[in-house]
Amino acid sequence: MGLISKQSVAAPIVIGVDAGSALIQSFDAATWTAGASSPLTMTGFTITGAQAVTWNSDNLLYYAIVTVSGPPVERRLVTVDPSTGVCTDIGSLGPGSFGAFSSLTYNSDLGILYAMGGSGAPLSVAECLFSVDINTAATTLLGGPYSVGGFGEIIAYNYDDDLIYHWSGNGMETISPVTFLASPIAVSGDPYDELTGAVYTGSGVFTATELVFSPASRSGYTITTAGVFDNVGSLPYRVRGLAYADPVLPVELSSFVSVINNSSVTLNWATASETNNSGFDIERSSVNGTWSKIANVSGNGTSAIGHNYTYTDRNLSSGIYNYRLKQIDYNGNFEYFNLSNEVNIGVPVKYDLSQNYPNPFNPSTVINYDLPFDGNVSIKIFDMSGKELMTLVNEVKTAGYYSVNFNASNLSSGVYFYTISADNFTATKKMMLVK
Image (cartoon, rainbow, N blue to C red; front, side, top):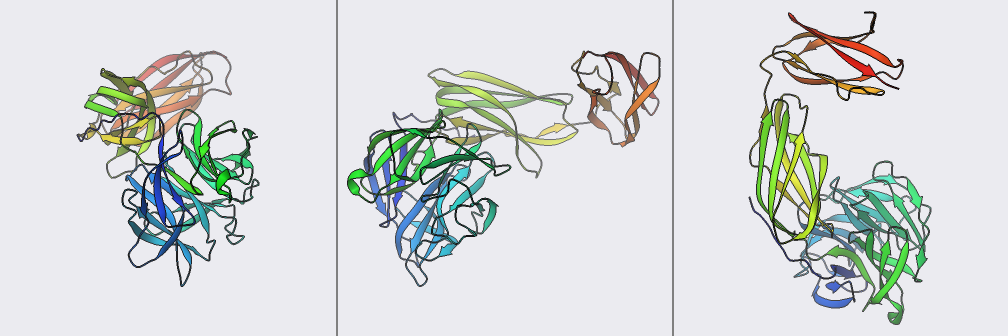
C-alpha cells in the first residue's frame, strides 16, 4: 500500500526564494537559521531571481515564479527541486521587470493553484486573484481587485478554515474560495513592513517574511488568523515564498478495508503509529469520476501505539465506487491512501420502504426505499383523514437504492402517512411532525 511514516520536527522547516538573486534556501522558521541553499537554474533560460514558491501536496511538486532575463524579461511558472535548484519550465506569467504575478499558494482541498497579481502588474491583473493551470501556466481571473491593495500581494491557503488569506501593504483579509469575496482582519502585535511570503503552519498560525530594503530590519514573523503579528527572527535577505521543505507524512497505516451492507459501506482502517496526525478526510468517487470529500475523522495527534478508525457511508445508489483517505498532519502536509478494491453497491433483492429518519422530525425528513426491478414508482403523503397532500415521487426508476427528502415546513404538527406503490408492491408507514 506504500505506507509512509516520519518523525516530526520541533519547528516548521520552510523554503524561500530570493527576489534579488537566483537562490532557493531552507530555513528553520523558529529562529530563521538558514539551511542548505541551491542556485536556481533552468535549461534555455537565465534566472535572475524568484518571487514565490509553494508546495502542491497532490503531486508532491514545488511550484515557483522565477524572473528570467530577456528578451523579454518576464516571470515564468516552473516546478523546482529545492534540493538542487533545477527548474522545469511551464509557461510565462507576464512580461516586464515586475511581471504579472508575485505570490502563489495551493488549495489542498479543491486542488487549485492560486496566484495574486503584483502591484506592478497591469490594472487588469494588479491585486486580483487568479487560478493557474499547472500544465500550461494559463491564468483565469477569480476575483478582485481587493481593497487592502498596496505593495506585496501575498496569499496563503488555510486548510483548517478553507480560506485564502491575503496581505498587502499593512492590510490583511480572508478571501472565500467559493465566492471570492474578501473580509478584512484588523492587525495587531509587533510592527512590520510589507510581507513577501507566508505559509500556513497549522493551529491557526502562519509563518511569514517581510519586505524591507534595509538588511538590518528584515524579519520573520508568525501571524495568527486573528491578525496578531509576532517578530521571531531576522532574515539574511528578502526571503519570498514560502513552502514546506518536509512534506513527508507522520502516519503509518497498517490496514484499510471496506464492508458492504445493502446500500451502506463501512470503511475500517488502522494505524501502527502516529505523529502530528490532525485527521483523515474520507473521499469518494464513482468509477472514472471526480473525487469529493464526504467526511472528516479526527486523528490522535502523536501516539506510539496504533489506533482503529471507522466511518460508514450510508444510502448509496447502486453503482461502483472508489474510496481514499487523505491523511493530514498539523503542518498541512497530507498523503492519500487508496482503498485497494472497488466497492460495488448492487440492486436490492426485494422491495422495501424504510421508516423515515429522523422521526419525529421538523421540518424535513428522509425516506429510503429499495427497488429490485425497473418500473414506475409513486410515493405520496397523506394526513390522518386519508386526504392526499402531495406526491414526492412519480416516475420510472431503475432498480436500486433510493432516498427522497420530505419537507413539511408548510404543514402543521401531527401524524402523517407515506405510501409507496411500485409494480405489485405497496407499503405505508406513519411519521410524526413536531414543530
